[in-house]
Structure formats: C-alpha cells, structure tokens
Image (cartoon, rainbow, N blue to C red; front, side, top):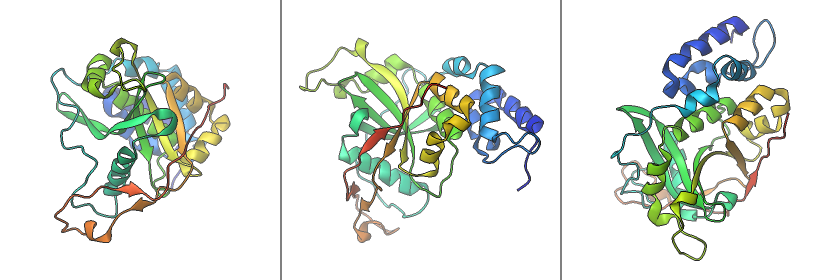
Length: 275
C-alpha cells in the first residue's frame, strides 16, 4: 500500500475537524504504518496535530450532548441475545453480553450495561461497549474494547472513539440514568454528587492494541493525547472463550441465550508512564 507524505496526513486530519463528533471514523485515523517522507508513524503525526494545532482535548469536551429526554438505557438488556451469528460485529456483541453476565470486571467494578447506542441530534455517533461502576472509587466507566486479534484498529482510533462517546454524554443525566444501580459495597445507595464519569479501553493481553500500549514510548504524542483525554487502559489476561451451545448460534434460532465464559476474566491496568 502506498505510503502517504506527512503533508497529506496533516491535510486529511485538518479536514476531519469540521465534523469532530465523527472524526474518529476517518480512514486516516485508523491507518497503520509510517509517512513516506519523514518515516513518522501516522498515529503519532495525527496525535501531534490534534494536540498542538487543534487543542483537541478541549474541543472534544465541548461536543453536543445526547439531548435531555433521550432514552439511553435500553429495557431489553438482560444479558441474553437472539439469533446470533458467529462472525463479524455480532461476535463482539456476544462478548459484551458475556461480560455483563459475568458482572465483575476487576478495578472497573461491576458491569451494569452493554452495547449502549449514542445518538446526538439524530446522528448515530457510535456504541458504548460496556458501562461499569466501581463503588470504591465512585467511578462510572464508559468502556470500549476490541475483541478480535485480527481486528487491528489502532490505539489512536480506539482512544478517539471512546473519548467521543464519553463526551457525547451529559454527566448528570448519564449518572441519573443508572442511579438505581449505583450502590455502595453494602448495597446502600450512594450520593450521586460523588460519582464521576471516566472512559476506559479494554484489550486482550498480547493483542495488537496491547502491544501498542507497551510501545507508547515510540509515540509520545499518542501517549500524551490519551492522558489528556483521561482514558484508562486495561488488558484481559486470559483469552475470552465463550461457552455457547451450538443450537443457539444457528441463524434460525428462536430462543434467547445467555453467553458466558469458560474462564474468569482477569484485568490488569496498563499504566502510561510520564514521557
């Protein structure tokens, strides 16, 4: 594939700023490799441009929010799926439901929702893979993850996507949406004024994205952008092997099923060292 010069990468990035709410979908954002003339990683050059030319962390915090009165929490989210398929995005939907059924997600707390669509002013922005609540830190986490090793989305793409979804939320309304599930460890309700909303990324240990996190010293502007967007990164330390009955994965399945895991997911936070 032909390598792009730095000037073209910058021009494509600048053009995306006209539609910040869908910027993360731009093909240049998810491009792997290095520029033709300066041999700089595409992600590093884009992150540098977003930070220094556009003050992106501040811009994204000003995104239009999901309007008041819009239903965020879907009533049919009970951990079951109907008519699933083995391949494609449906596989990630099964993993999201299985993590919801597992309930606990280590430092991220208890999973309280999954596959939450985000729509602003009639425009589909994207889907939040998981929502979790950690009672100890009073943190409501908006989580994005990549399940397939073959799905080599860049770390930059994942960070910009979850940051966009998180900042499309009005914190107060989002917290109120899940108020009945935000309880202290003893089950008692907590003061909602103490709850904070944060974003996180979740990857398989050893995956393309996880290796990218370990190599962030080579892309310091990507690391800085992730830090300024207040995104935590975690890896799941075991392969997520779903325990599904074959009869429930036929295309003509008529009954809902509840995906679960063979193994207990173990999370480790990937700390980004100051650069």
